[in-house]
Amino acid sequence: MIGISEPFRNDRYGEELRTQFGRVRAALDAKYGNSETIDMLKPGALWTEPDDWVMAIRQNERMFGAYWPDPDPVQSDDLGYIELVVSTLSSDTAYMVLRYGTTTFEDCERAIAERQDSAF
Image (cartoon, rainbow, N blue to C red; front, side, top):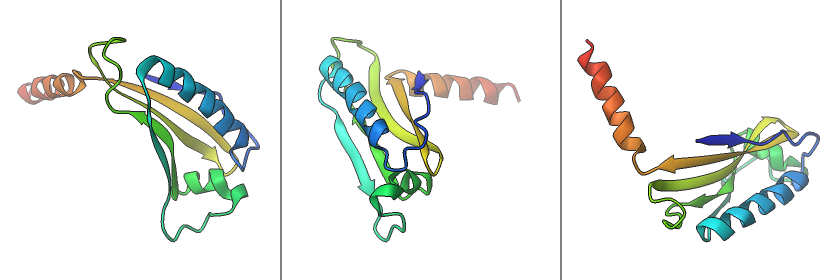
């Protein structure tokens, strides 16, 4: 399951986006347990200034997000992972993507592939 936020426009620094990201992350942490931070700027990146924050993500030089590799099973016994990441539309417009994955997802993919293979 995937959810996408409204775009955060004219936010080259990513300030409003990161504020809202922090709120969503805190709510998910409260429900599913503590997340792992993904905040990485690649070595040798060209887009390193504070006003290049969104552009660095756009150019695949920065990754920013949070990951719950093993969410609290009390909330859902088949919830495999949760991922909250930042993606971009342009050099100054970004948005959040929230993904929920189930523990049975790989089984479903395998069953689909087997059915497609047997059709030939």
